[in-house]
Length: 249
Image (cartoon, rainbow, N blue to C red):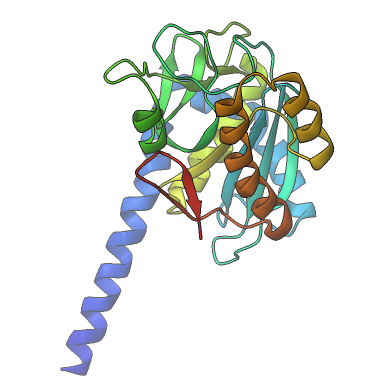
């Protein structure tokens, strides 16, 4: 009985590992992914080694600041809880204004707490990572049935509501995400803030948008999550209230 149990557990572990590893194998079928590996993998491995990390033991988390045109990449080992910032990339172009995306065609980049839910190795914008916009908060706070969708982190340097990183930089981001998913990270977090939400910046933007109390209230809600992440360097755990506000654990 004991021997059978060990064999069963071993089989389950092997199956789980195989299913995870299959994602990287599947992605390697595409020329742009193979090009990214050829051009960028050694660069990434060198940086990861400085943090005692490897592509085979990696989770990542992305933080974007719209007004700063900045995308930060954080990473940790699979078993760790705490992330370290590895890379800061310039977002190549931006559409819209500070504030969340609330309807289709408004040109806005979303603001809130998301995760990567799609990998597109044959994107019209070279490589792209899709976000789960609209999330539950967006659906509650937006016009019913008119939220829009298809928000991506992608290559190129043009955008309407997405985060374009150039073809060169997206190779690095996409490759990190592929390895993270291959390591079992099913929902890679992506936090999008209007700006670096320090107390000083909040005061500046509260004054600038004092005629929009709903926007200020929304930003205060985001800042709670921002402060939590800056303090702990750990993934934010949250739910969404009936009014669409984020409730942080």
